[in-house]
Each structure stands twice: as C-alpha cells, then as structure tokens.
Image (tube, rainbow, N blue to C red):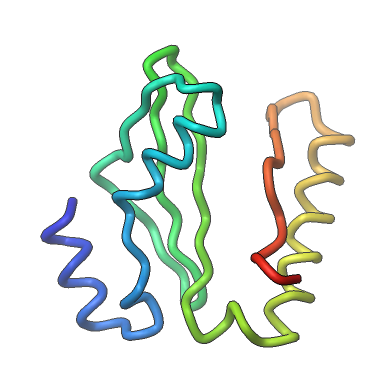
Length: 109
C-alpha cells in the first residue's frame, strides 16, 4: 500500500501531508484498544481519500480524510456537515446498513 500511496501523493499535492500509518493507532485507541490494520487498498475522490480499517474482531471501518486545501475552508466545513447529515439520515431510515458516526468535525471547528 505504502508505495502506491506515496506515488498517489506525488501526483496529488492536496494529500501530501496525509499519512495512513497513524490511522491504525487512532482507530485502535477509539475502539478501546482493539487491534486493527489499515487495508492495503484505498480509494479517493477529488477532495478526499478513504482507507479501510480492519479490526481483529471482524469489524471494518471506513476512515475518510479530506485533502489539505479543503480542511481550512468554510465550504469544506459546510460540506462535512452535509455529509454528516446524509449519514445520519441513512442510518435513521435504513435497515440495510449499520453506520456509526464517530467524529465529524475537524479540530478547531
């Protein structure tokens, strides 16, 4: 993963400061020290990147990170609020998908 990730970052400067390695520690800490790994694959859009986190108990998380240039803009804060509202709506209205929203705000917002 990391060689593919490094190549991706070279081509996409907005993601240059994102490091998937700390995701593992943050996810483990958030789930009361249940061990996990960051899967080798990742997906990206024009404004974000998504990592899959796999815990030893079989639970998978999707970890979404915004690119650097968007985190500080007011538009990105509004976009995050829209994403969160959408996730909450799907969680409320759907019996197909189990969704847990852990954190939705960048630091300082």
